[in-house]
Image (cartoon, rainbow, N blue to C red; front, side, top):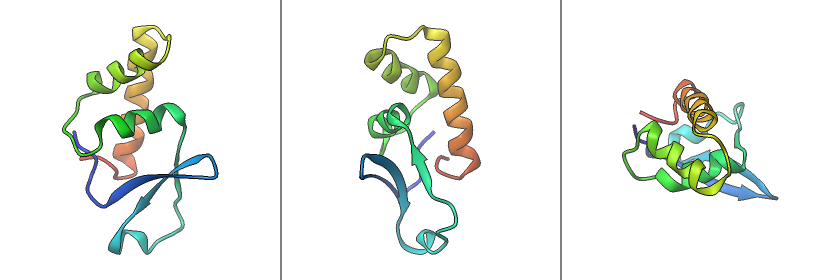
Length: 88
């Protein structure tokens, strides 16, 4: 997997927001906000190919969480990112 080009993560007033560049930025009806842990994962893999296990490793390194919980959380966020077109 890879985060599609044309998207970047910005922190605005303490909130993490994904913004698009160019033609992708015309429709403002969908603002994509990430929580702290999903922003952490985004930052760790942006510009790189990655797997769900890579994202899981990011969570396990940063938080005291059980492996199975991290895997479930990662599966959920990956599905969300795919559904809104952020990753390929």
